[in-house]
Image (cartoon, rainbow, N blue to C red; front, top):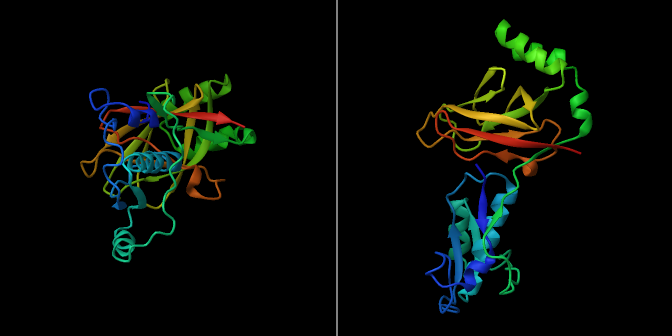
Length: 241
């Protein structure tokens, strides 16, 4: 499941080619826009920034300017009522020959290379798996097919009873009840990725998992998976640096 956002070249195309086409409508909306954005299921800060840049460019092509884009409703209404113009979005120039298509949103968990030097036996014990699953996972660890790491997992939307699972090819399954407060759990990396599956959709809006490394100094490197249906799987790529 890959996440992507339209490139700015869509604005130069007609509506017959793309729903974001603005050819022939340039300058049709010379207004200052305050957008109270209720969408909170961004995959990560890169995704949120890309969405803001896209709509800023879209409105600029129409002759307008995006003054506010925030899920903070009181702030949005306050800025609108006061006609605040500070901190407005600046739309980057988009050449007409820019690539036309979809730009992937990076969703990669970047680990310091010394992360994998942790005591794998101790981490395996922390998982408290049933004995058959623990033995199967230990065998994968011994041959280097799996590495265990700690992550902080949480509900990236509203705490509503969601439960995510982490799986391996050996059949091991870790259940992670998702709370708004991050919970530290041990998960396996297999094939340079972490396999996540939706187990329980508590609120009916999909399982919303947020992931953060314990070593992260802020939430800017967090990963939010797409909303998962029960039984739906997504893989979070892992990169060492």
